[in-house]
Length: 215
Image 1 (cartoon, rainbow, N blue to C red):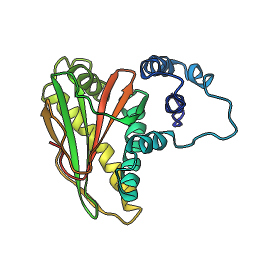
Image 2: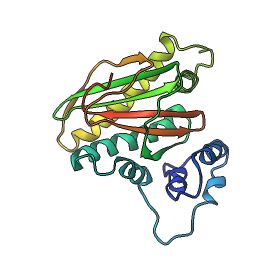
Image 3: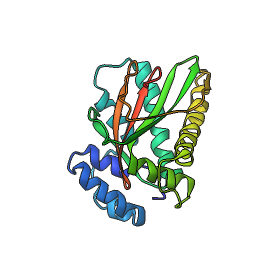
């Protein structure tokens, strides 16, 4: 889609479509944005930050306003960069993710230390992790989760975390990126952790948000 406005997230937030139906629409929307635009409800006011709305619903009352502000800023950038750099539309579920990814699954994360502590990462099944790596690297020759695939996903996270750090610096919160980490069949266990299910045109995976390393 050319527009940065997340039409699919609005549709999912309306709770009139299942995640599976949304994933079908995401695939259609990559070729024809009008397919989803026509499904938008005719309302007087439009939610201009639907990703934020979904995150707040998923988080509930278990997080401080400061944590929610940081997590929201990060996820909005993450979803936007999925569109721009991985070439897939994406939405997040409105409830926390509690199920594990099918094994083998791969995790990657990048920590930020400084005026605020934050870790953002992903956990994805082998097939989804590999497709994310292919799309980001634009290298269709990747056929297994090897060092090149891991580096591609780690580089994507580095880009997102870098942009997120710049956004936080505008709020006078300085942070330094640490080296990426990766693991296999990870059970996330971070402090103040929030796991969100992400649905894309290439499959579903988790974003993990925490204030320290979750694996």
